[in-house]
Image (cartoon, rainbow, N blue to C red; front, side, top):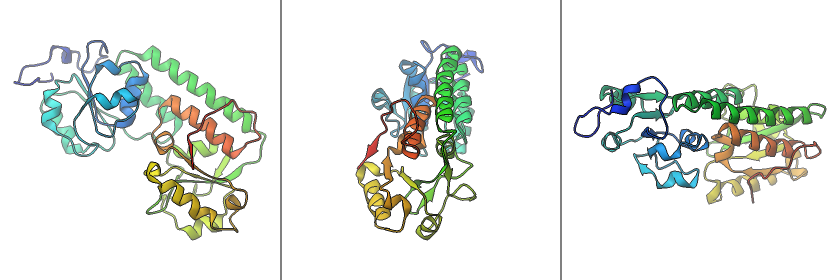
Length: 288
């Protein structure tokens, strides 16, 4: 049973492993994607605390901050008297253990490795919050959008794609990451798909000669993405450069999607891979 400030047990925490009622629960989120999913489920009012990196949606920015993703204030969390603490794959295990020792219910979410994994995590969260029906409806709609993309690109030639998710050092999407699903479901071939690690050299990318480069690196809002785009366009022999198919996208959408944003981002990526495909209109966050 969770303890509130002063050592008194929280009555709401008596539901323990069962579903909570969002209208009454007090939730602390320790990860940006978890926070976004809470709001997507319509349970944002139950969120009493999150991290400084929880910036989406706008309402997440006004919540009490309990630290960064990896450096948390246990004292601050305790003061918020949560019924449920949701930890991410980046939450330090020793802090998860400490919170559990204090009597709090802590549920951990690993980083999903596929679109299906994203959906499963969302359904699990919906179950915890007593919002399973809403979660199933959102995941169902996302799956329909994904299937529509697959059908639209199925008859088209698969083009080579380099999805850059890191700049210094250079880092690419690989098969064990859900970001690979953007490429494969969107009708492309991941040039780094056979690699165990996403670490790459510029020379490797040039040798593999992708038809399309998508840059989704953290720091793009400060010009890193534009710098990387200029870098790739400087190689005249590169097919993506010759055809002016080097694009910068919002890294938050590409690297940390909910089921809904995954589906919408997939449409945007598929349109970059196959501009000729009969896809629904999308509004990708393309940056200069």
